[in-house]
Length: 63
Length: 182
Image (cartoon, rainbow over all chains, first blue to last red; front, top):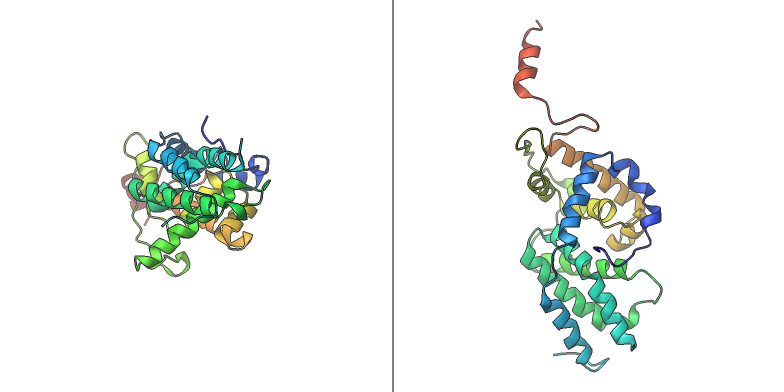
């Protein structure tokens, strides 16, 4: 629902577990802080921008 | 589906993460969205240089981060270097009942030097490995590790939490207990 682009790093999270794992208050708050940002609604302007970019001839620079 | 259409869909899917990272870096929603916009345009222009099958999110984060630092330089702002800086030690007390709320945490995060903040975000929240974070930041894995560790220590200091302890020392009670000695 939130982070749709998989980094493939999920399985390698162990490295940070000691420092920022679920037992760490800082680790939990950090995720809470970030998840809130990620789940924020995306303004339409970005979808519009990408649609515009796609209209431009490939390889042709704007401006 | 054309190649550019597929690329567009992938970019679209990455926007929530990019915005979260941008806000973490800039600490400002408007600047963050400008940064994301700039990143999307740059990524679009350089899409041929993206290697299919490699990590798109890491590639985009790298572009965004480079853009952020180049904007900071253009603004004539010194990029903070945590190694040589003495950040003001401003303790934040839990607002009530020892509850560390998100507002306190955000304020604490804001006090971190950029390099530490981005490191702890990439590792602790964005889900990157140390290797990927090092790639994104263009530095050694060990550097990322030490930044994350310093960021964590610093946040604990600011928020007055110690590893497994609860919230900060009660100033009055420690004075009372301390005063009986000698």
